[in-house]
Image (cartoon, rainbow, N blue to C red; front, side, top):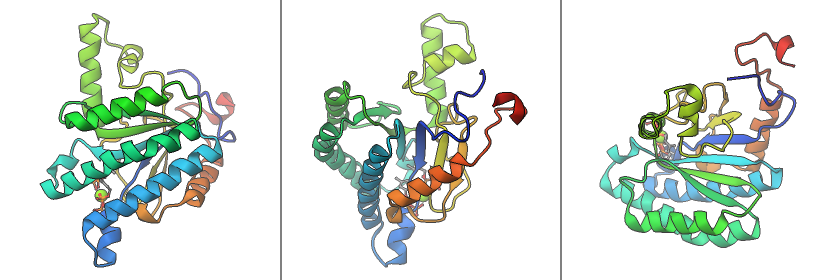
Length: 238
Ligand code: IPE
Ligand code: IPE
Ligand code: MG
């Protein structure tokens, strides 16, 4: 897929975050899981603000996976309620900070009202040129690849890496340079499988509700010290 566009000493343009550990955060405090999700939303707000201040171009937040429907209907309902709240409340913050909101994931399965709110916030912020926040909601990497293959076929294109990339949910967004996973789990859980082929991973043991802007800065600083080789020998890609 060509030579790397970013060298390790330059900062990441796109950071993806697998925001994990809300349930454990609540359990440690003897609280219901829902409280963990509530605190997780506050952490997400803070991280969006920090990412904007840091001058990051793209931030993808893994909000709800295609597998998270396996949870109890109470928990799913609670998370979707928080999503509704975020979409309605955050629009002013996004507007005053020139933040563009986008969606990645399958629209099928999401409630009509959530889709409407999502479409509204995406449309109302689409002209902003600051940070782009991509909400991975009802998102699964496998699902995105399967839908992309469907579009390739529908458009009568030959199946190739380039054509499949063009048919992803947000084809104009560069691949994530850095993928952060909180709560100490060492797995992708179906996040950005195609785009993350050469992403650098940062695993933090901190639970998501405890994450702040300084954790994001630390992850970026560590990323900045890495050597990205993309399969080549480092001397040749400098
Ligand atoms: C992440 O926290 C939020 C979602 C997956 C929606 P979890 O709810 O997975 O928290 P743990 O993993 O149970 O601690
Ligand atoms: C990944 O976390 C999904 C999101 C953060 C939205 P999970 O908690 O669902 O992942 P697993 O089940 O531990 O792999
Ligand atoms: Mg989890």
